[in-house]
Amino acid sequence: MEPLGRLRRDPVLFAECLLDFKPFPYQAEILADPSPRIVACLGRQTGKTTTIALKAVHFAYCNADTTTLIVSPSLRQSTIMFDRILGFVNGSRLLGGSVVRQTRTIFELSNGSRIVALPCSEHLLRGYTADLIVVDEAAFLEDEVITDILFPMLATTDGMLILLSTPWGTGNFFHRAFCDPRYSTHRVPSSRNPLIPEEFLEEQRRRMTRESYAMEYEALFVDAATSYFPMDLINDCVATYLEFEKPGDLRPGDYYGGLDLGKLKDNSVLAVVRAGEPVRLVYLKEFRLGTSYPEVIGDVVEVDRELKLRKLLVDRSGIGEAVVDELREEGVDSAEGAFFTRPKKVEYMAYMKLMMQRGRFKMPYDQKLISQMNEQRYEYSPSGQIRFWHPPSGHDDLLWAVALALWATKRDTGGVVFIK
Image 1 (cartoon, rainbow, N blue to C red):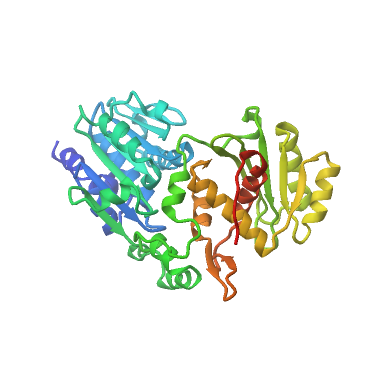
Image 2: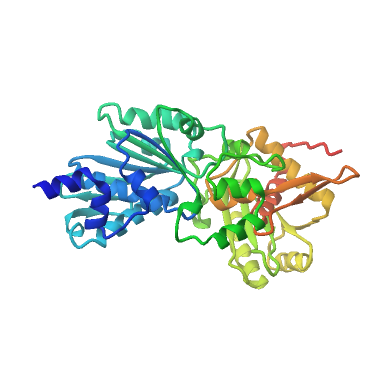
């Protein structure tokens, strides 16, 4: 029984012997951490999902009749971790046979333990008692969700809480927990992964802003002084109870759209918001690079047939005017061209920021959109004009599509923006 006892006590040995996975030293440190409260702040490509998935598998197999919850801002994000867990279990000759029930979000083991993937939805979270809770992208969860919903789940089990995230902003529970000496913390910059060449990191350092690189590759809590949308403001607008919807599932309402047309290196993007208090981003489609304009037009026409967009603003630069004409010929009567001059860009961005500051705009968690928003920089010219820009390696097509959709609602939301 001693070998089994060692596997139960040593998650690193468990990973090596039963899952055929040799962790890097920093992964082994996290795996072997027995603390009941763990905060892991990791850079890109450090294997944070893999590391915590291994820890969850070890816990479930070595602790009978326990419940492990995987929670993140969206169900899609939770299932990424869940799928990694399933990959380890089903890929193991010794462990795979112990699964007695498996669905898209739940699997149960013959020892009575189960792992459940959940979105951060209050009505779906309540009612659980948990022995281990893993919170992915914890920086985006509202403080009250962690303190008032998740912590009580651990009260009767004296269970474990693991918070992991990229360091998105400082005005959140994740950052405060990282700075709290009562928590066991791990900061792992991408440079600790021996599979990432220094040349790659140097290339990213040159292509990104200093702040973006520090946050995403060095796992440091920073916020760019020149970011037009600070992370704390973005966090306030991310509503974890929202999920992007499919056109066929959208309920009746007043819908407005923004269409940013891609060029040679950018994607075309369609964003749709539903008017109300607050205005909600409900649909976001990024077309694959190289998608033809006729194909983009066809998709937009299908969305409009179902939603009857009250207004669709289309980037009219370049080929945009011809796209507007074609959309109207196809029955999208609400299509209008939107100028992308510098003064108009300032208006679009200022209105979006105003809606965010007033709490009148909410959006689902989407890491790519969030990154584009936070990467949007601004500076003043000698004449006092604002210029927007993003890092050479970045994009802003998702951001501009959303900004256009919000601007399209301006007439109905009663927003007023004063531009000097």
